[in-house]
Image 1 (cartoon, rainbow, N blue to C red):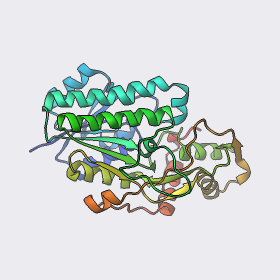
Image 2: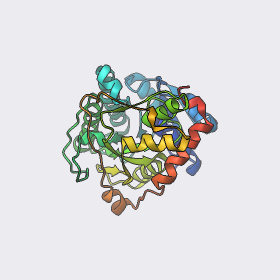
Image 3: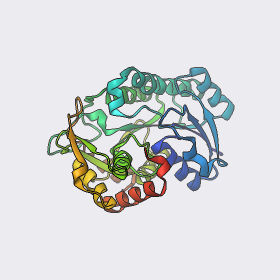
Length: 323
């Protein structure tokens, strides 16, 4: 049977990478893209597949629009990326994050329930973040049973949307999966994020601001590996299950900045330590054992290769940098 898949937020970073990957691997699927095209959404991210998708500009919080999309396109699967995602922005304007990430997710789930019916086997994959778990010390990893403990308005909004998705499985027996990923890197990322932001500043020979001492740790995942994991969850994920997706590539923020400067041939004198972010989580690290053992996914890209490939992509596509 022909599948009609709604992908939300696919003009953004991870979503656009996934749309490219999914359209190439499954040409028999009809991909309907819903994106509000906020500042972080870029329709040009989809230029290479524009003939393979149906694009609809709109807000996931618009119940009537989402209902119309479901009915007009006979949607029988959802992969939900759409979200406000920048921690600093969530500190400045937190209500926007609650509106999009919580109300938007709830809208999609409720429409899916009403159209598909309770107990439907149609798949709804909710894409989330490891930040919902809070912060770690020097040891240990986030697992699917780690207590939800968000520390920023962004992570709190994502944790809330995770819990709503879980509730629609528990209460209405919908075929929901939640994925929690570590920091993604790769092509098409908005220039506000760490890697393209630091590349932009270095190319302009401007100071690279590093929060605090720069020793905060993130687990990095190449975006194409993440796309493959979502594909597997969509097709093979067990109903109601949460899957953590991580690359076991823990790096301190200062390491990332220095690596970028080295690859660009720039001096580390450009680094400027600034006042730390409010509520700055110290360390994220994911244990992906469950998705590896249950679904057979493994990250394929070594960080040392992926980060150079990423930097070089931005050098070739400077329109994605803030220059």
